[in-house]
Image (cartoon, rainbow, N blue to C red; front, side, top):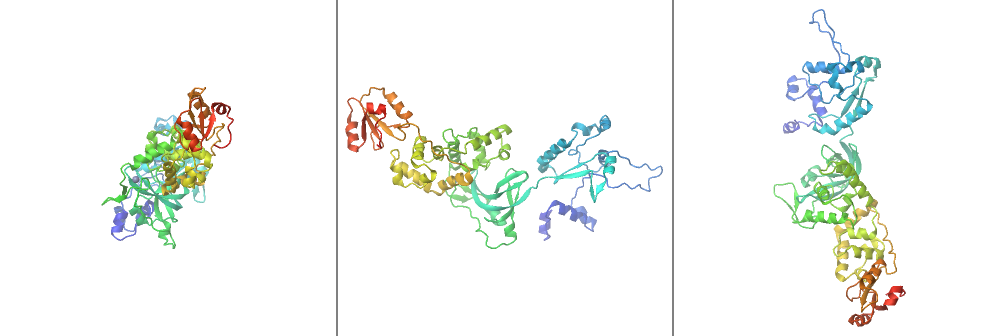
Length: 515
Ligand SMILES: [Zn+2]
């Protein structure tokens, strides 16, 4: 209807209510008739005895509101039957004609359940509704209750929470979907829409952002319709032509996930990443993040994770911590119980040790063991993020290649964003790495010659003491434990200035000092 009006240069209707009211108010009934209005009746206002009805005139008598509705339906009026529930007094329950109302007699809990049921289905109804009305069924009681001002005491409206709300765009980020499509997403100041806290809303594509002129800092209207993912309907700041707004949003040239060039398919609104393994790689990365030795988020298997990525709910690790029951409830393969369990598992993973956190980031060449070593050596994530390459390679386990990899990660925009997002608002709170109990913490041992102890036993002592065993001589070795008939390793160690200790010293642990 609005499209037709716009073509004729007439103003569009703001909503169905205005369209209906405007149509009924038309002076020319032909205009009203052209508006394709449909009427559903919900009650009788007044009954005036017609003069044409000859005596004896029988007044229409109804005992209940439901009887009125039945009669209206019998006369051919459209009455909403599916969504009408009633409660009848006991004496009426036994009348078979009334029984169809009694499938689900409503007390106050029933009314509340009915309200929730209608709200959940309201988007699939062939008309718009904004709530339900609970009424007293018996007309005699209705009359007794009367009205206050113009409001009857026997009816009360329960409105649904609004589909729309006003909030501010804090940031516009780009999410990459299953097919590599880049979607701009507005990060919003949290606002509750239809009972759910909304923090992200889709902006669909560049054209949509341009048309609605949505910018960072704008006041906007967000809507949560039938879809799980809320959208930004309009920018109030743009409408008011506010001054000093943010710069217009531009889709990046490179994919935020894989760095591949982004192209716009001719004739399509969508921008796409050209990277071949873009999404697959991201799923791998998230899988590593949640794995047992990393953040250890139980119940987040590859299938669920894959769905979360495809649905656009999770693009980076920090998104996992924004998942809630409502977001998860709609997903295939996930019942209510699993959704709850998953939310709890995510909750439990919020306080990793520094070593686990570092390992979870998936920095190339930084495995579980090295993550622990770095954590103990530097103490805080900030110290690691800002460590100079020389500081890094001063650690025995860290060679130049590893040092470079760590620096590259923390120098990259993506790496920094991932960590920032995880740390902001205490999404994740890193615990200090527990100082390894044990006298060999952070030390590396190498054995040479024949020992009194079995080699396996010696290695076990080192590991239990928190140390590491090397397999060849290098400057990472702190102590060379020399047994009988040591080989060339001894000479080499001496040459390299590595401390040499005897088996006795090793067993007694009495060699202290810094290697
Ligand atoms: Zn990509």
